[in-house]
Image 1 (tube, rainbow, N blue to C red):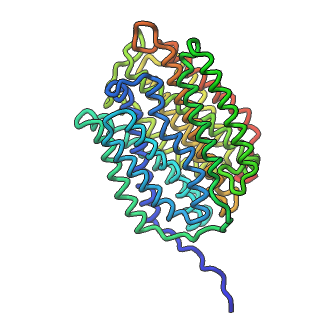
Image 2 (cartoon, rainbow, N blue to C red):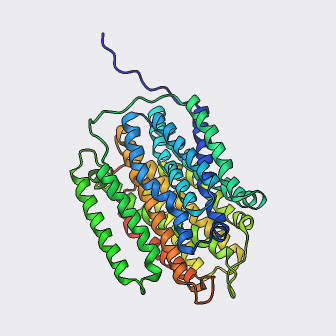
Image 3 (tube, rainbow, N blue to C red):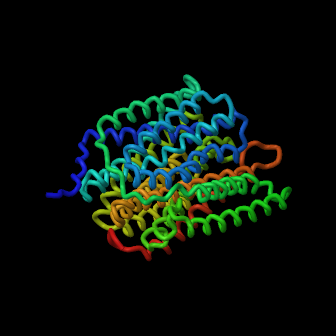
Length: 465
């Protein structure tokens, strides 16, 4: 008598919490740059645009690694790929902790960017080992603990950098990542590989996407000096358009594309990606502009705060982001994605537009940043949980990686746009950006967040389309 394949082993609570603690550790490692960015700019003699590059290079690497991680996880098993990916993250954390200069620190951040790919791998494992209802809660828990790790990073980075050195603020969370990776490897049941497709890796697509991201960063870096180098900027824009056109052509013809454009064409997917991009652009501008505003000592604006004080001011936002993960998963399950994302878009637009006119008191910054973090957490978690339950189980990694790639692209564009605005907004003879540069940044991000409601209103009310 022939029997079918044995059902996958159920994931125990200890394994779920170990996965969550690994998410906390990686979230902490990801977040240490944000509250200490002004300190790093001074120690490494960086311009605001270079600071923005440091702030988002991890996300850019994540945009490249995430679709590969999701594809490998679907093909070879989520646990197997997750452990290998966290080995790269650990190496990146150690490089960052030992970095004597900006180029070496950038290398460490590039390696750390592999951590972004850990999220779709976690979703693959959770989806395979838990029933659909429990998997939504577990996905929300892991997502929430990842952003909750930013609370640990933001609180610890400043005091550690000031009491010890900037090197230790990278080393301590890296040690935690190594420890919890070993624990996850021990507790998590193995998941069977997915269906073999016989296709190789889409290396042309990966190289072209890398070209798009690098060229995009160069465009934002040169934008403040566009008046003195118009031909260079124009050439970069032409090159960017060529990369995009070539990438789209390659992805349409590839047997196993890096980004499945056919899946991206599904309304539930592309609408989620558009909204996620917009929300993360607003979040990234807020994440970059707020610490810079807290550090600045301008005439009638800024607070002259140090890394430790900046970390405490950002703490309520980290708490809000932590709560937003589980709340987004539960809210999507009970009310559907459209209700959750509508709430998030309204919160985001209100927070950013309000900060553009009210940013002279600490409580303005605290409340605005908390609302931005809450809106981002609600949106991303609702989108990921909705898509994870709207596609076949074997496509979970690919589908969720599309949203997560969009997340890091939005973050990269938002961060570099914020850096370009501040660099161009530094008056002659000063090293402090003008207040108008901060106002413009908050205003642009707020208007874009409000416009996202045009897409949100066309989304399905329920879990599936």
